[in-house]
Length: 498
Image (cartoon, rainbow, N blue to C red; front, side, top):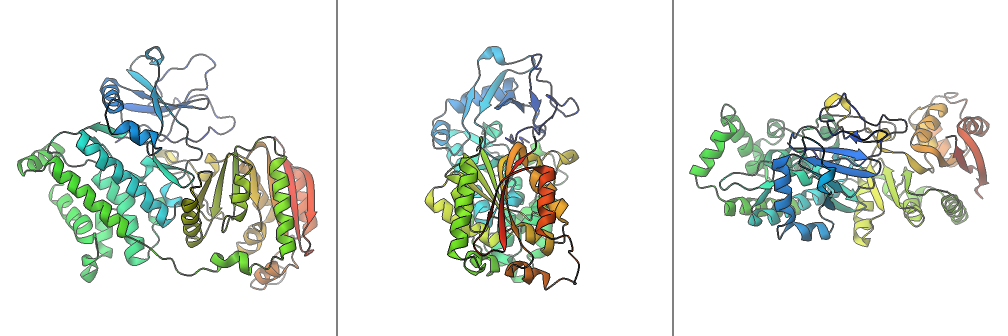
């Protein structure tokens, strides 16, 4: 199984290599910061490493031969040129260390995300790209060894296939080896959302290998069996899997070849899955947050002042490679940040809001804003093997600027998180020497009063402006402070201690 390379930076102070991880046998020169990618160890034919800002993939002789055939094919270079497959080049032969036959260098993905952080439409678009690539590969005599959702990442709203090591020559009569993974990590989550209105994210977050056919089968009984895609890809798939449980992969392949399974049949199956996935849709229920910008109570003067403050904070920053917009809602400030930064990750808890934002940004061709679904009071943890195969949200950040606008009161009052913990969380998501742009909503503000009305009296005695400013001082230097015209909200620009 080829696990895709994950383009996240090493956390500050991380060791240059990880001898305790499998597959770290790519030696480094003295003083090199070469380090193994924790998410790449399951395929012995290739390993992914980081060297500074470079993302490298070491290949054994068989994988190197497959890569060279792939690079010389008619279908692969156009996909790479179109940005649908991660940009990849082979390094000079002298750079390949002992044991490895070749080394590739990949384009770096701006920010790594996981499928359980995507909206429905994002997951569907990722699935469609996966199928499109397979549809192009099959006639050219290639297939992919796996079909995991983790094989895809994003450049803004454009999905990109990153697991170049997954491509392999197609052996006539063999089924797609990645079919099960594709179903469990892409198709089944889409079916859950589209047919039952069940959120797929908790399932994918809990199980790195996705949703099992037997789990799906129990949810799609009776007339639900007849819903599009269910009978074939859930029940029939599960039945075949159980029937062949005692057989070897070789036996199953031989049986399929004897039954006349062909490349043409495989291609027809992929086209049928594309048609199914394209038809799947999910209209999330109406959410309070969808119209938040209209209902939040900001005056035009407040809004204008806030935008000027954010713009000034971003333009004054020394580094603007990555901006986090936490509690992004409809992306108003993420868009503003994108005009002054290389890349913006817009985090919002409500899936309906994120899906709407994604569709809008996609329609605009926006490649600098990545919208993600995440509850900041319960952010994505590390997962997979030893809890590090899929990095936690905190381990993937290190933003030059963190925007936390109209957020603190929701965490401190709405979610009962003490102010010191709120600020510790926000500042930890920034790179050393980064900036925090944060809004404090005073207790007398209408939105704060609405939240407090649902809490016992006296529960938040420390939710005060003076206490908040004292806490800010422990994390850095307040460079600027603006009062909004309404008089019940204050904006701060803080240079964080490095």
